[in-house]
Amino acid sequence: MASTITSLNRNIDFRRAYSRGKVYSNPALVTYVARTRAGICRVGITTSKKIGNAVERNRSRRVIRAAFRTALPQVEGSWDIVFVARSKTKYLKSTQLETIIFNHLKQAGVIH
Image (cartoon, rainbow, N blue to C red; front, side, top):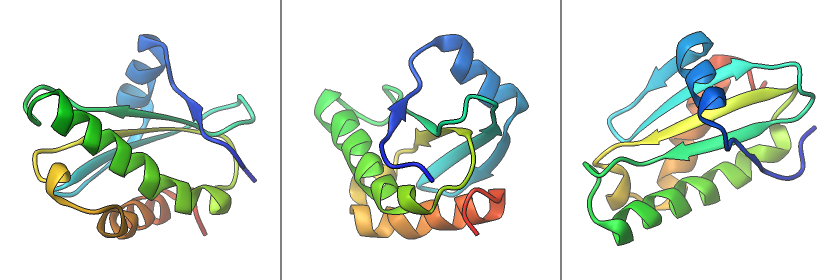
């Protein structure tokens, strides 16, 4: 059971999640999930310039991170999870994103 959020930092880790992971999409969020052998759950969040200016991108990342914190205690196993913000993300609150993240992680088998 994971207790803290460890970040994905390297580009190769993001690319591995994109190529080998399963994809779950929603108009507000895209989630890539890949099983790893690292023994920890690592999370990466990406926001492109299509989202908006720096303030809007940072808010999107902050809201995604806050929404994922509620799901973190239920994560079982070691996973690389990448959340990709979409243009609708900046208009949502973390409680609305929580349901989306729970649905994606449940479909992926990360949460039971």
